Length: 299
Image 1: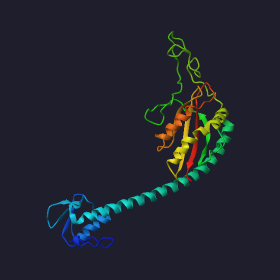
Image 2: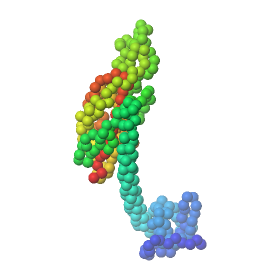
Image 3: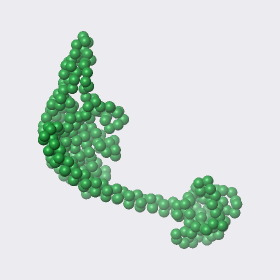
Image 4: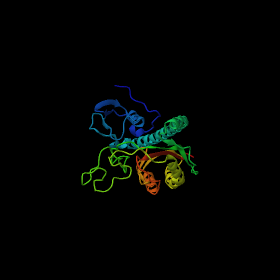
């Protein structure tokens, strides 16, 4: 006979004393054990109500169908739920602590990168980074300064992904008019603004400083969306990395949130609705992408 497992605490229940029990686990048969040993398996999580058991070579049946053990099955299930909840809370607190530490590290790295980027851009004239814009208050602030850069080249649009609404930029090539002449659109009209007659891309001609000014003027309209996000996560620090692309007509044509937890749902829908009302100067050529990150809650 194998050593009988003993419970972590003494189980005083005359109804399960003695017995010659066997049990199955992963297709193997174990035992014999007495009733207290079988109950100990329950409280250790090595058995549950569905575990097949047999006494004195009798028929096999789930442990939950043995009346003497039913109360122990319920107690063990309740204890396991409590343990899982406690463990989950500990893991959540640990993740939050790591997120705060990472935010501090990234914040320091961002300051260094910003200084280096400004120096580089001053020499090369590519893109522009703004200082931190004015904070919102009420637990909402700008976590990372806005950055304006030329949008990427040709775009593969994924209708189910985070690039919904992104308009493709013009490609190299010629546009044929009904008469075969260059410079006309497929419908026979003039080529869109920013596309020369030979179909090539026009270099970016937007004014980053004007975009920064328009962003500073309109950014407070995002506060209700961010405030709702904070209300839905009380006590939690949430980073909202927002990116949007401005079309040649001065309207926002694409919105992206670089966080899988926030890409869908009420926050994204709210941001898209507000940004649809923003306006910027019209311009020809390649489109700019604006990136900015907000910090919400954490108090």
